[in-house]
Image 1: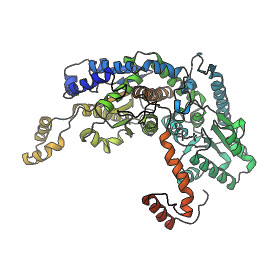
Image 2: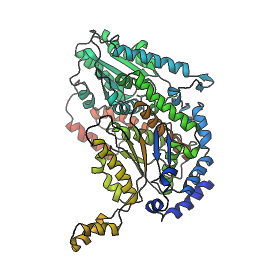
Image 3: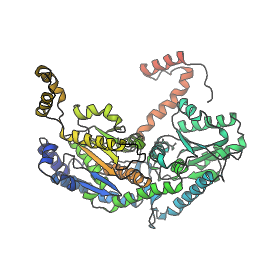
Image 4: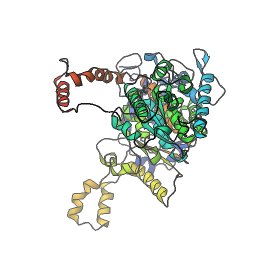
Length: 552
Ligand code: G6Q
């Protein structure tokens, strides 16, 4: 047994879970008109309504006790004081310094990192203004029109998600595209119709060794040279965001167009650094600063608010309640906001790469569940796809709903319809529809009794399905920053409870190593050390592979 499952709060929660087995949310709401005001919390312009969860005051008290037994408050202090929380990589976790708007230092081994952070931000700002106002141009003097960010994982998902979320704020003269996949189709499509004379490439890679990114970067360079650019022009059309200056220089990008960040910024937490350069180019540095300001406001809230009114703590602990005490293996995120259409993909990495672990910080196997499968799609689209399972499937899948009071693009009644659907779905999940209600509806519709009897079981909704709703006025840069930081800290809270290192990702290594070994075998044939499936697939593919590979 681990320290966690032996803690008294854990025992109490196991006991309490049994008590809650027969309690329905519908009954909880019927018996208490004050659930909404009591189980809502607000910070940074975001209202979290967590009243549609299977919780009572006792549940919340026990979850808070669990957090205290797990020293959540001191882990939180360690996060903000630059401790080397990422022990397996011997790194501090200081991404909050990137959005620090206070005059407090952010210390790493006694040294304040803020001067360096501000210096890179100033360079970014000058570069963005230079591109926007025409001081920085392509080699023929034409202003840049297209920006192609080449990066993957943390060097792609964050800036891509934010660029999409801030579409209404985009500079109309700049188009930003993202290329991540080593599948040549991604680069091919991105370069389609681009003119090298006004195209700027950003090669974003913390290590500058990632195979996909370097392969795409080399192919982009080949394309640039083939389409009329000269070697001497590369420095004007390719900039880098990286911690690896030497590799950047070897690629042909000079220090004046290299924007650095630091090993204390994890890939999936890096969008606040120069990794946000494509976002800043899309929306301008002032807007990018507003994203950072929103994230800073959420940092301050997380750092200082009491646990029971702390949004990241509440979201994290509610997740723990379902994952560990109700065996929920999945969690849905449903933004009723088209501009947040990449949020689920971004959160997949944030939650599953951070907390998809089965050993604790000391390398001991855990005896409790950790991160669930996270998935999602924008509403209302998902109502026409996986919501069937949320409402009537055999598993209970807690879900987060996100929606803005105000639309960026008001067209007729669209936004009211969107809002009504969002509200209706959480109400339906919570209330369900009883057999009596379903029978009454069938009768009222004049359904013949034999047909009604056939349909009745299909028309029943069990209800009692939990959800959180996050409401905000409008998806502006500040709110977006606060929302993303909220989820970052939620992940931190869960990692602290589960006693795991949320900041490493060793689970991505093995596949990469095997891919390196398999690459030549696609030409030479499989070596005998493979299983028959892998070897069989190599042989099958070799027989069918077209001869060569051509450039884009
Ligand atoms: C994120 C991970 C991972 C990383 C990519 C890209 O936390 O570390 O997704 O961001 O593998 O790495 P590079 O930025 O080094 O190319």
